[in-house]
Each structure stands twice: as C-alpha cells, then as structure tokens.
Image 1: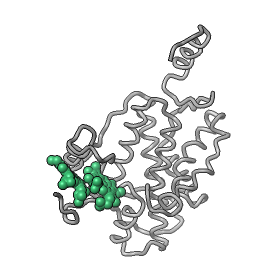
Image 2 (image 1 turned 60 degrees about the vertical axis):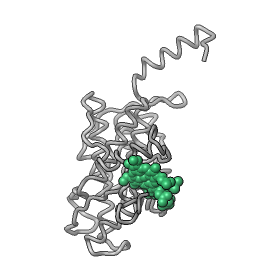
Image 3 (image 1 turned 120 degrees about the horizontal axis):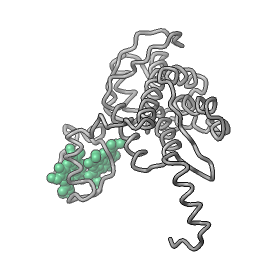
Length: 246
Ligand code: HEC
Ligand code: HEC
C-alpha cells in the first residue's frame, strides 16, 4: 500500500509505537498486565461452573481480572459469547473448550502473529502432553480423588474418552464434570503463565511437536512431497495400527 498523506503515515507510526505488541482492534487497545496464576485457576474453576462452559471459564477468568485491573475496553467485552465452546463447540466434541478459551484470550491480547502462534502452540502441546487435571480446589463442587491422564489430543471427545476410561465412569457422571471443571483451572493457569512470561520477555518454548508428527509432516506438510495436510499432531486420529500407510 502506498502512503499518500503525511497524516496517515504519522498515525500508522503512532499506532505501532504506542501499542507495541498488544492487540489493537477497532481503535481499542487490549493491554495485558500480569495476573496471578493461582487466582486465575481458582476463578476459572468458579466461572466454568457458573457458565456451564469450559471456554467461558478460561476466557472470562482472564478478561474479568483485566477488567478489574485495567478497566475498559475489557469491562465491556461480552465474555458470555464464549459459552459456545462447551463440549468441544456446542457439544460437537471438537476442540477442547478450555483450549479454545485460552487461544481466544491469547488472540485478544497479543498483536504479533508469530507470538500468538508460539503461545497457542505451547498451550496446546502442554495440554496434549500433560497428565491432567492437577488443580485441587479448596471447596470442590464435587469432592473426589480424580485420576490424571495425558489427553494425547487437543480434541474434546478423545480427551474426555481417555479420561473416563481410566476413571471408569461415564461421560454424564459428576466425576467427569468435575474433571473438566478442574481442567479449565489448569488451562487458565497455563495460559496466564505463558502470557506473563511473554509480557516479561522471558517466554521460551518448552514443548515441541512430537517426532512422529514431524516425520509425517516431512512429506505431508508444506514443502513435503504430498503437501496435503495442515495439522500439528497425527497420532490421535491416524494410529499406525489403524492405518495401513501406503
Ligand atoms: C516419506 C514420505 C511420507 C511420510 C514420512 C508419511 N507419509 Fe503418509 N503418505 C505419503 C504418500 C506419498 C502418500 C500417498 C500414497 C498414495 O497415494 O499412494 C501418503 C498417504 C497417506 C495417507 C492416505 C492413505 C490412504 O489410504 O489414502 C495417510 C492417512 C497418511 N499418509 C498418513 C501419514 C501419517 C499419519 C504419517 C506419519 C505417521 C505419514 N503419513 C508419513 C508419504 C509419506
Ligand atoms: C482430528 C483428527 C485428525 C488429525 C489430528 C489428523 N487427521 Fe488426517 N485425516 C483425518 C480424517 C478423518 C481423514 C479423512 C478420512 C480418512 O481418509 O481416513 C484424514 C485424512 C488424511 C489423509 C488422506 C488425505 C487423502 O487425500 O486421502 C492424510 C494424508 C492425512 N490425513 C494425514 C495426516 C497427518 C500427516 C496428520 C498430522 C500432521 C493428520 N492427518 C492429522 C483425521 C485427522
């Protein structure tokens, strides 16, 4: 784009320097300030239960604290819209709503595409590769000693299925509901930990795509001989035992 007037050039420059790397949309700047990770976890646990939605729990635990600390434009953000993420988007079992909420917060708060990507990758890899839930509420909605399971997927349905198998309960049990509520606390805590580290300039990647995925993508990813796939994990859906690879 050609800059045709001095005023335009000046305002473009002003936007870049004033907002550094925070997201700016429709004239609003969503400035992040560091939050307490444990308070965030506790809030996400409560808000998930209130909104009956993991995505709402994670997202609003962050934005409601920013509304307290920063004020506008956070105070006017319609957090209620995030209830759609429950059950992997309205019960479709796709992307885990806790992750959807974390990714939405990252997307709102971080203006630099590469950083948004890096933090979202880190959050998703942490989730699929961690034994969760680990959050232990002071006053649980449902008192239980819950097992931890590595989801091995970022999708709601496989993540829940792996867990209910280990817990020996069904999807509609109180245990499963409590597990997901605690998982929202874990995910909100992790999201804020990443946002804090990025804010302080101390963010480094700790997780990587697993070796098998990297192998698959060497042929199926961009620049591969097939170049027909956009994904960052394969095993959850294409296990070698289920798929005959040609
Ligand atoms: C050395 C390159 C290479 C690697 C590594 C590779 N693939 Fe492929 N894959 C191919 C090619 C080439 C085809 C297409 C074969 C054909 O159409 O005959 C293919 C086809 C497939 C198909 C389609 C099979 C079908 O029945 O149509 C799937 C699914 C697949 N690969 C998954 C994977 C997964 C998952 C991995 C990693 C575990 C992987 N591939 C690793 C080259 C590779
Ligand atoms: C959420 C589940 C899911 C994930 C994750 C996933 N796939 Fe698939 N993939 C599918 C489904 C479903 C199909 C279509 C049905 C089929 O062919 O089995 C498919 C089809 C394919 C095909 C065949 C395309 C064709 O033209 O026939 C390839 C190749 C493939 N996937 C590779 C990969 C690779 C490599 C990864 C990891 C980087 C991956 N997939 C991750 C579910 C998934």
